[in-house]
Amino acid sequence: MKKAVCLLSGGMDSAVCAAIAKSEGYDVVPLTIQYNQRHIRELDAAKKLVRYFGFREHKIFDIDLKRIGGSALTDEMKVPEGKSLEEIKNGRIPATYVPARNTIFLSIALAYAEVAGADAIFIGVNHMDSSGYPDCRPTYLKKYQEMADLATKRAVEGRPTKIMAPLSEMTKADIVKKGAQLHVPFELAWSCYSGRKKACGVCDSCTLRLAGFSEAGMTDPLEYEK
Amino acid sequence: MKKAVCLLSGGMDSAVCAAIAKSEGYDVVPLTIQYNQRHIRELDAAKKLVRYFGFREHKIFDIDLKRIGGSALTDEMKVPEGKSLEEIKNGRIPATYVPARNTIFLSIALAYAEVAGADAIFIGVNHMDSSGYPDCRPTYLKKYQEMADLATKRAVEGRPTKIMAPLSEMTKADIVKKGAQLHVPFELAWSCYSGRKKACGVCDSCTLRLAGFSEAGMTDPLEYEK
Image (cartoon, rainbow over all chains, first blue to last red; front, side):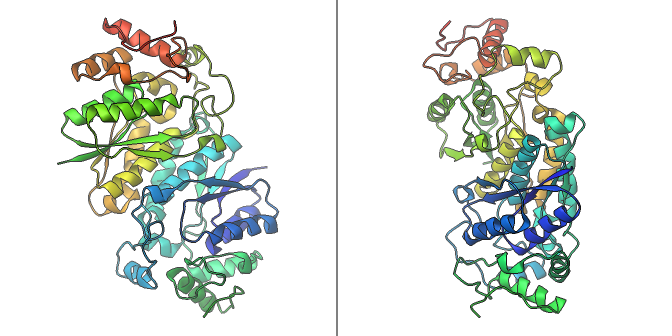
């Protein structure tokens, strides 16, 4: 059975991404990377998703990117409400950008894939991410693959690990529809940038998610403050 | 003044690498990554080297690669004495290989370089490393550079960070000579795989180091058990 390490943040996109890997017949090895981000509630969501999908060993890996800094998500800055969407639309890289985040995440996943003997790594970057964040773009992922093909013992011995980004051409609405089709329990997936009891409904992440459901003609089962 | 993040393990190679960066006029920002390796003594060595060279803020970044496993350097296996050199000579990847280590290290350095505003990252991989470890080879480093050029905000905004590996074509003897020329305090640099008071003199790392000094016609000022 082919095996895949799935980066599972606990958010909606990674939940759908993992469901796709499962539906494609992969034995899914979930990997959650805690990088001392503000929205620690995602970890609980990731754990619940792992239980729901019946995945086995959930690898939770800590790396304190706060020690590196340089982002609204790790620094003690206020997460900009609505700002980053505007920035993305205007072709700028938003304040929620975390320096080299996906490069670090994929590298940890690459190491884990080698040890776990995984054929693939699934990462849930989407079309909107691509316009805002350099390390979400298909050109970047293609280069990452070329580098990874030379980086590990597994790869140079002829068993490269494939980087899969099945959401990279999807909008949030597409992701909602795909997730519904695969019975993804959206009420368990946490995307809000705030760590409150209910999702805030106003941060960039909530705004995007709600717009995705709305555009898909569906209702988000998650509870919101407003 | 141009700035460089220098990966400084505390070993001989990274010490010479940092000295080269300094001699080339870089403002050196030392970065030591502690990955829960067996030879924690290197950290003390790195701190002493930072003081000696007069570098400023020493960033020490923890990442527990033991949680990933798959290497003699992080697992509870005995570090093979003399074995890995033989393996390298026979064209095999030795047990001291750590899955995706340099990919992870360079990625953390890339993030730090972006936050610190550094133009370059120095990494002390040498010619012998290249034959044994895939993630030390020039072809790998070239691909890493191409990926990095698409990975960060800094890079896509036209200020790419250059990966520099000035030792990549050097033998241990070359490194000893270069270090001597740059007044590197070899007695402060710790390369031994064991964490004892004196260097063991028999592990692969000690063997390589001693052979390098011998070939260079010099005496290693470090104290050895045998």
